[in-house]
Image 1 (cartoon, rainbow, N blue to C red):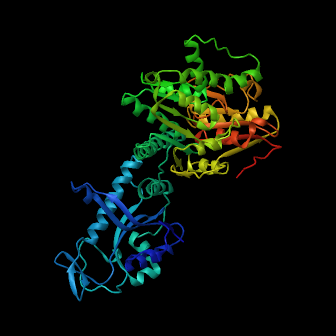
Image 2: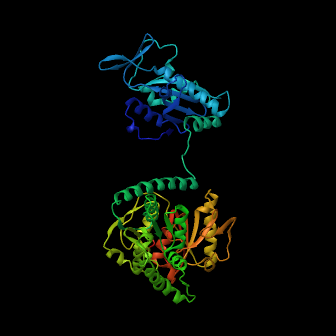
Image 3: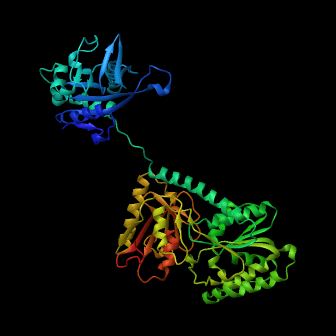
Amino acid sequence: MATMIPNIDPFSIENNGERMFYQAANELPNEYTVLYSYKYTSNEHEDAFAKIKEADFVIVHPGLGYLVVEVKQGEISYQNGIWYELKNRGYQPIKKNPVEQAQNAMFAILQLYKERAKTQHFPLKIKYAVCFPECNQVTGLLPSDLDSHSVFLFEDLEKLEDKILRLFDASEKRHEQEAVEVLINKVLAPSFKVFAGLEKQIEMFNQVSRRVLTEEQERILEETELDKRKIFFGAAGTGKTFLAMEKARRLANTGKKVFLTCFNRNLATYFLHYLSTANITCLNFHDYLLKVLQEQGNETAVPENVEERGRFFAETLPTLAFDHFMLLPEEEKFDAIIVDEGQDFQEFWYSCLESMLKADGEFYIFADPNQNLFNTQTEHLKRFAISKQRLTYNLRNTETINQWMTAYLTEGKLKARLQSGMPVSYFSWETPAEEKRLIEREIGRLVSQGIQPKRIVILSPNIKEKSSLAGVNKIKDWSVGGINDSNCIRFATIRSFKGLEADIVFLIGLKKGSLACSDADIYVGGSRARFLLYIFHEKAWSLKRHP
């Protein structure tokens, strides 16, 4: 059987004449290639829409050449140089001359072949024909540009190859396979694909992500504008940090004095990078308290002892600060306080924050109970007698990463706004050396595909010197830096990267019995990945919520 391009069900062809010819052509020997509905362009007209033309069929044979066939269904007549077709019991002029259509296509194909093969010669014959598959006889005289061998009727479809051979007058076939391959692959049936490299995919994803985030951010802030005190509950990726920063920016633009705070120092540094205005103070909670008390001459020293230091930050420092702010004049307090990652704050710390705020001040909290890494009880947030809103759309991660995250949610739902995405990749290891080799291999694959190393963040439950990358400052040719370094692969602990995000995350060092590998830690680490997530875990231990 012939190679049909496209290879379709003949009964999907509405035109009965074309369907009959397609079925007959399909029965030609396998040396033939038959193209149906071949589109080409012509420079005869200035109108761009008029340039697109079509040949009903192009039949190619490596020992003959090619034949263009124009098919006309029904009864046809030719008088005084005009073609007619029988319609509604009368003959009506055909808009296009079928012989000219076949001729034009034949010469257009030849010209395109010469251009793409970079030659002035096609080594085989070229022919054209007109087929009337619903007719079985011809009367009268044919025009000079059409002979009997170029007219195909119903009976010719039964022995189509014989008819083609007579038309080509082929006593012998000389194969020109190379020329025919150029004709088919570069002229009649060229192939192409539209794609984006992995680096470009990430760029396009981030562009869409920014647009979606901006639209959702605008909607939420406008809908909640009248709420002067509010708690926003949302899982990772729901845009809490960006909402908090934009809320701070809008309030500051109205002249209000704003305090934007959090528990994580690295997140506070991120705030400072994007918010540079005199009206906004960006510091993590404890650093701000220390700064204020020390500026007031209070010799507040952080204890050396680990246990005492924990009690100092949890109780002593907030209590000292509370006493200070309670005595502060109203005009020296903040007009608005915004807390990001509010689930990290103990209940009494909110009392301390309230003491910093004017009586009629605005107070906003953004929290994710699923990210409770520090064993703080978040029920008090739900008991606060202020307006609450749940954020349910994931605006950061691909759909596949969002599905992975959903298994770790302890409360709330999370719907993806950014569709598709590559699967989460899992790699098991038995020794740290094996994990290191796997990490190096996968990073090498990514960079070889054009990924910029700065897009990659390696997150571990432990500091680097206690991970499989201890002592590693380079992975192959690419530097490994810290959380605030640029133009390199970054390494950070899961907890220090909390509230931040990266295009590609390597979540490493997950192993049995580690207190730092809780569900909350895995959820926090994996949810930092916008586009690609790689998980490296000890072979003896399977992820509790492995899909």
